[in-house]
Amino acid sequence: MTPFDHLPQVSFMGPDATEPFALRTYDKTRMVLGRTMEDWLRPAVAYWHSFVANGLDPFGAPTQQRPWFQGEPLPAALQKADAAFTFLERLGLPFFCFHDRDVAPEGATLRDSNAHLDHVLDRIEQHMERTGIRLLWGTANLFSHPRYMAGAATNPDPEVFAYAAGQVTHALEATKRLGGSNYVLWGGREGYDTLLNTDLAREDAQLGRFLNLVVEHKHRIGFTGTILIEPKPMEPTKHQYDRDVATVYGFLARHNLLGEVKVNIEANHATLAGHSFEHEIATAAALGLLGSVDMNRGDPQNGWDTDQFPTNAQDLSLAILEVVRAGGLGQGGFNFDAKIRRQSIDVEDLLHAHVGGIDTMARALLIAERITLDGALDAALERRYAGWDTQFGQAALSGAMSLPMLAEHAANGGPGPSAQSGRQEALENLVTRLSC
Ligand code: XUL
Ligand code: CO
Image: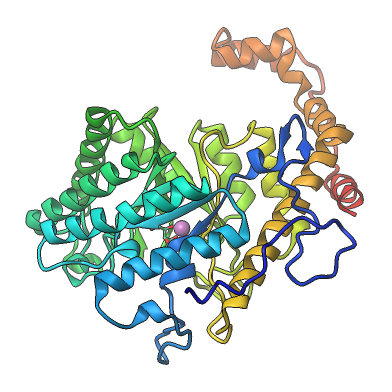
């Protein structure tokens, strides 16, 4: 018996369906630009938000009750795993993601904690085999326990660095064991609250070493998934080192990790960094770092990570368009790193949230398809840069022309180049028309 048993089976019922749990757009087998909706989106449920969170906030007690929040921790973790897979089956999405500590309780020692995880993963492995539900990515929680309050890899104490290494070793091996497609490192407390007690140069060196150790171990054990860093600018620390995609690129270049590590881009982290979600995706694609996506949204009036489910397909379509332009996420996917609100205390709320989220994404994908098939946006982009494809443009870009040669070219050009309209409003109208 799980609290999710009575939930209905979610299925695609078409655009006219009014049943509250009907998928009206997400038809996983529908072909979009040469592949199925499911293959484009590879959607996942986040174990932590859906099965661990309880509505606790800094102002008040938990509001959401689940049977596994009580009792002996290890049997409760098994009960939670059984319930989680009932929910995943009802929802019918292909993937899930977890932190080590979401799945199994911390023990008295690192060895105990590892044994707890292995024990619960035996059960999870059975559920995965039975249901065909797969692991998009695993990760280690290196931010909840007080030992990590001053960081994990960037801690001033090397013993904490070693403890984090122990946890990641096991979580990476567990991810491999379950056939995970990726392994994520979000630098929860890798940052600082005040520079008064922080040596930035040391912490950068520590983080670089840690990540190199993780990559070495990935190859040592033959894990074929992608290692992903998840950028976030702040919260919980005042400043986090993995601020945004461009910052992560600089870090990877500095520590010889380009080609080994990509990024997991979260919508609400992008907006916290002062970027749009699509900016972060486009930047990652341009730098060869696009790995996976944590799907959620912020609240435009709030300056923190509200982790809400997406509801606006038109907004989201610009981000999905960047994914389509990049040719997809490969072995990445769209993980719902999103939580229901504190007052959403029924298990039905969890299903409503995911059904709405996946339908919003499917609608955004269809808009991106229309924009792509229409072709006018891409054609306008090509026209705008056409000069760079001429012999002169290529010579200027390749280094064949020196600065004085360019100066000479410009000096011989009479009155010089004429300005061209950027046509922003016309392009916005085009996108709006194709979004209806
Ligand atoms: C926190 C966050 C994490 C990571 C995994 O903001 O996004 O849940 O996705 O550690
Ligand atoms: Co996330």
